[in-house]
Image 1 (cartoon, helix red, strand yellow):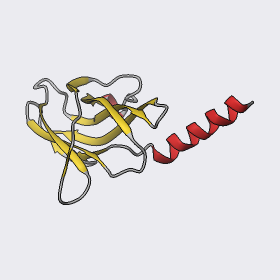
Image 2 (cartoon, helix red, strand yellow):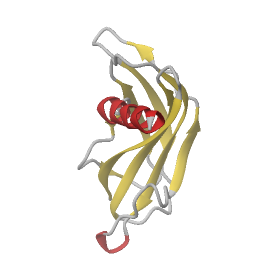
Image 3 (cartoon, helix red, strand yellow):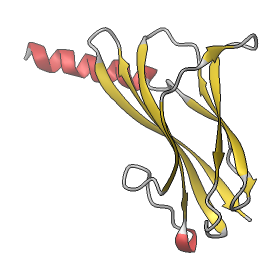
Length: 139
């Protein structure tokens, strides 16, 4: 019983503080070109709970017939996978820019640009896997 209560509290804390990362760019509505080099921005807002970074992945996936596959099922074309080491900035918070190149064969139309983030949350710690998306259009 005690374990159940602790697990519930940990899950509640994770929900309350799970906004540990944001996709600064691209944003919803951005138009991108196949073969284009894009400077993606990953933001880590200030937080009261510690999160030890494991890494991120940036990916883009076309949405055939306007239907996008959820990132938890398929990321599509992985543009970057590796460390996330944001630096503090005068404007507040932390961020890191990543220069990625979209595949030249990317289908025109609706697509989903996904940031996948894995960190170890809290003093326990426990793994936190999260996705942030931007609905973009490939032109």
